[in-house]
Length: 182
Image (tube, rainbow, N blue to C red; front, side):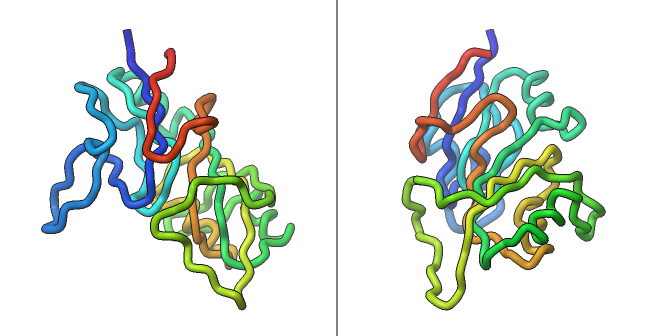
């Protein structure tokens, strides 16, 4: 029977079990999860937080991670500035990036979510406002959400993946994981 693990990845943790390639040791999944034979289904950048799915089932891993399946991924995004409807419409229509036009995103402004504290905290600047967006994409380019918000003039300050398909972080504290039925 397949295993599926939902993990709330903290800021600064690599989405892999070992760290090869640097002289300094960075935290990896092995500091949080000690289950043999499971692997991440997709990636989440070191400076992003939130839902990471892990499984021991190659077909399930492919269905989750492969962009051809267009599995929706929902992010809570704190951006610099006050994103207005014009900015959000750009995201809804697709944004031109160096690697081409993105698919249209579902996006709306939201109130600041009640999240765990980030370590280190996001730098606060009195003279620069910020706002929160809920953004859903159906592709998975490298650092895509960050590049999309930067392209509309609102750089990302904090990025939390909240949902992948039917699975979400609801009730899962940062650094914790739980197994769910497949």
